[in-house]
Image (cartoon, rainbow, N blue to C red; front, side, top):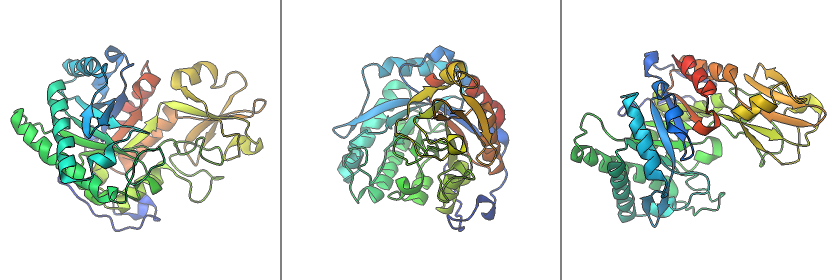
Length: 373
């Protein structure tokens, strides 16, 4: 989402990545590719030969314990069976997601953290899994209607440390001394990690799945690239982007090799957009339908009045329909390849995507795999 390597970057967040000291070069074979998958995905169609890890989404926090939906064990068994096609594949259980409550309570006290970690270890052992991906959105923030406390900042670190100690014991119990259980986390950027001790968290986690998408949506004032690699020429000076998010984590002391850049396998349509600049960075109605990659290909990209354009600064495609006044932001094989180049150039940990069912034929997954290797 490599333990024991801590690199402290002293460059300030506002500096460009090029100003930071470059880490040692890495073998490109070590760039990991991580996918999220839900219960609806057809496991047998996943090109697992291209993957390093699959995160099953989602488990929940119920009364302080890690719990599964009724359909989860069968899907987890199907995912674990995919190891017959890729013996290096890791299957992780992702817990949480947007609007998932219970984390603040589970992290509040030592007893609560122990209860959470014990239940997580039990679920991993019962389902033959390789680790836990923690998707708390977000410590210290109640925006999604979840409970949040000022103590979340320190307690999140303590929760992860408790998980690490419990999973290390579980590895001994399960005779996995040479194959330790993984702990990863899905984290965002900017203010969404202002209540997280990033350097301490980075030291505990095996890797971090950076949710570098949804930069623009129904809650933003204008349209824009929702997963831009770099800031567009017409965007605000403080525009969110992949490179700015990575710079923030490096400046906080998170090792480069633990950063896994996330990409979306879906596009966002912005409706009733002001027509200037082909709809890019313009006000809109606030409505934002979401379309999976196959639907974009079949009905939108250079179809039905939508014209594809390329933003060479942001390194992103976009669609504009002048008659319908609709702007669509999305990733495609060209932009994903450039993001993979960015990951390799900055010696990051790899790439992650959300999510498998949005690319059932593997076109975007194939582009990522080719780009990383």
